[in-house]
Length: 146
Image (cartoon, rainbow, N blue to C red):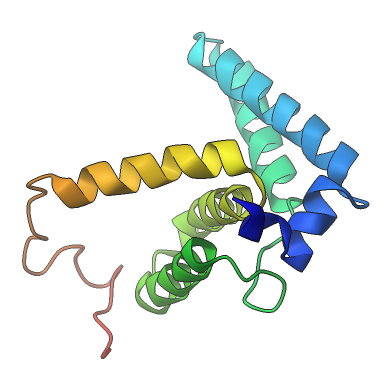
């Protein structure tokens, strides 16, 4: 776990200028998700969903320049490959937010990073089915050369 705390990103998030922001952002994010999950009406759900997106887009981005943890670097590479292929502009912001939150949390939060590691290893151990040929479909997804 110590290696996560050595990256510039982790230090900024845990001990630096972003510490209070991250604590409050996570609290608001979780509160918003719970409220949407509890079956709010349509308009309050839209408001909270917008708040979640807005707060997550303010989340600092982990990059190959500011982090060194191997799992985080792998996720950054996967994100880059994903956005070379994904072409559905109306949903791009949702995936940008998801990757920013996932990678940022992986880079600085040892507990939640361990949960993600467990999840990934469970997938690796399972008999996960292969991708279906031609899916996702054109024009939303373009297979790129490796």
